[in-house]
Image 1 (spheres, helix red, strand yellow):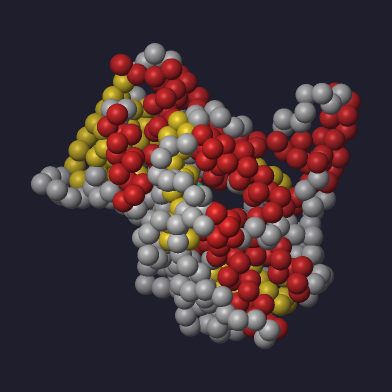
Image 2 (cartoon, helix red, strand yellow):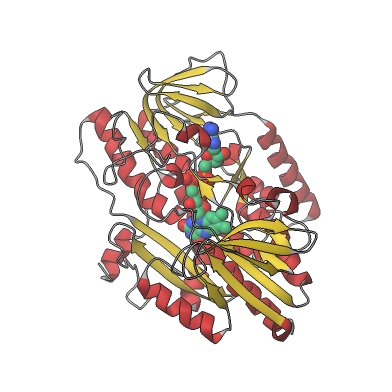
Length: 456
Ligand SMILES: Cc1cc2nc3c(=O)[nH]c(=O)nc-3n(C[C@H](O)[C@H](O)[C@H](O)COP(=O)(O)OP(=O)(O)OC[C@H]3O[C@@H](n4cnc5c(N)ncnc54)[C@H](O)[C@@H]3O)c2cc1C
């Protein structure tokens, strides 16, 4: 369980009123707690009722309640990382509005107590034998499998990006390392060309590539360098945002703040010596050509795709995602396999908010298979993207990726910039995440939507 001591240690910002001695002892206790491995004990049977692959947002949101319902060590979570991140906070971290430490927690602190943490990676799936093979060569068998392995960031697909990232004004909020550079580079910027990119591939949180542009623009305005700055946004897609209601408002903001939006342009190469970015033009009259622009600041959103080990497995669809039914989250070929989150084929925008709704459906249906005592639940494609447009405002996009229609919680027009939804996103939702979502007891705002009688 996540203790107060652990929180103070990992967040690095315990209350100032605590005595030095008390916080030192808290740090020590947290250090001891995190050093006790909660990992796989090889003497135990390598067979579980449920194996969850991935202990990120999606994996933990299902593993916690499944392990409560199924009992001690019936559920195993295969997760290689020692650190769990609340990635939605990285927009705020990249703009200096939150600290990096606030976005992370030791995996040992968030791993459900009744689950068995197997600290390794899955290398291959054998769904006909109901087994997964770990990177260490061990085979684990299961009765039910939940795949929650996230999306893969393909940094190497942009020429010179891996070696350029984090240096000389090139950054990205999409990795734990480089997000810590974004704020530093924004603050050090003295004017010039600032470029922000969004690839043509599916990505997690499709709004994040532009949120950081609004926050950087605001900082440069306040620092007095805006008039010497040219800001351009390049998206590989044909729209600024998938849902028209929000896209319309975003375009108004871009116009008012002189942000130049360019469509069908995909970053292909960075030339660090000449500080140039090269784009492939994917549409319009210049289709098939390249565009080369100088940069002084470059925020890159890398191309993403399904994890390689998922793509090459019998579980994947033609595009490489885990092939599940969009309503029930059950695999289309293997009935005892489920998937949710970014690695799944669910045709909606990939966000933590979507996972909250998906996890409730998945848990209901999987426990229904085991106990035969409940109606099949269906996922409606709900997802949300809090489009931060400044350090005190945002547009709270909530919609169904299945219908393309807004699915808003509050009884006001959420396409307008507001402080209330900004505060909710920055201060309240992170608390909901750590206190409820990773513990499996947050299934999204649907009940509040009904209560407020907001948009259907
Ligand atoms: C900058 C940024 C801003 C964002 N903003 C928002 C926002 O405002 N709102 C929102 O709702 N969402 C936002 N998101 C998206 C959200 O963070 C993701 O959609 C969510 O974390 C996906 O959860 P997941 O469990 O599918 O993947 P992850 O949380 O990435 O977890 C995947 C896990 O699988 C593990 N794994 C990988 N390979 C293996 C393997 N071979 N074997 C075992 N385990 C493996 C990984 O170590 C990882 O822990 C944002 C993301 C970013 C990066």
